[in-house]
Image 1 (cartoon, rainbow, N blue to C red):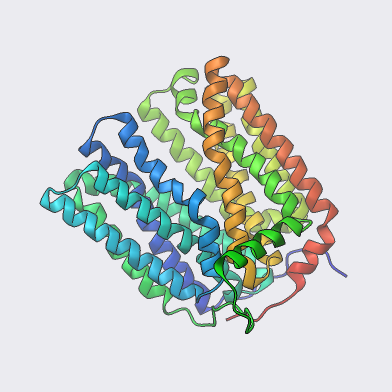
Image 2 (tube, one colour):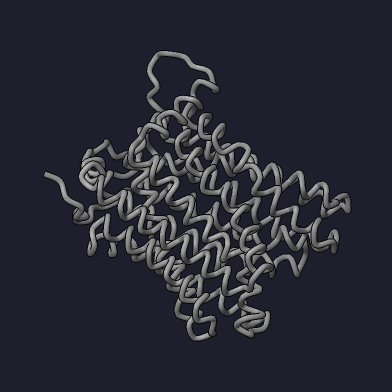
Length: 417
């Protein structure tokens, strides 16, 4: 007999905490670069289009290489893939630091660096997500994801970005050098994680293209994930509509200045951190189906409320509440994927899943701008809220229909490192 109750806690073990330390160091570096790279771009050119291309090129590898990177991760030692990806990022940044220090840097050098860093991130992220189920037990997946997500939010929002800006103000090379040290440290730490992290693929040799087809075919045929990927894709599309015009909504509709917007972002960040921390508690209280359904619907309703009642008090309640809901949902849905996807297929299926989700984000941002131009900014938030709410209801329905199969997947224990 299965149910959705979360078992009592057991120690996560030394291997998890080594993985956690490595991931935290890597995310800390990501946060520093999130502030430093745009500042480097602005120091090289003041053309808005040229500056925006840095972020575009950093994101583009997720559309081009997420699935091939997943196939690669399913053929190699995931621990080694994480280590090499971080060492590669450190090497790229070391070259950028030398170029900045010697005056050889240009916007084109930064474009190449951003693109290469993005490629390495697709390998690192796929490998890192595939590592966790080998390090903790199935019943501990959500707790492990919650801790990793919390550390990511803290290092990115509250530590990395402010430190990156501060170091850049002292000398442009400093944040790049700090990131090099952190990536090398993360590579050393992940090498200490004990366990076997090579997927069990049997004796048959296959090609990369055959592996990719196998992963895509598995996802298309899976009755649960096939529906979840489209439902969460719609939610991500709605999220991108709101995020793409969020700064204009704050400045023009809510009437706050740039400094006030920074404070609002901090409040939203607090909501995201609380969501990651509380995700396991929410699941324990509501069950997995109820927790994910409520998280998805609440997020959509917060966007809808901000569009219908576009006032500062409503935004100060709904924006962080929405961040809490989506952060909790991300932890919960990642745990479900890790429980459902076979270890040997995880990289490929995860890559395909992320391609759908991330691929819709640029289109969502473009749609948000088009709707705001044709009507107004609050209308775009209403559209985003309606889409996200529909997606939340759809996720709830899928989970309710397959709740026993999902509970069975979490009940199937695997060896913990």
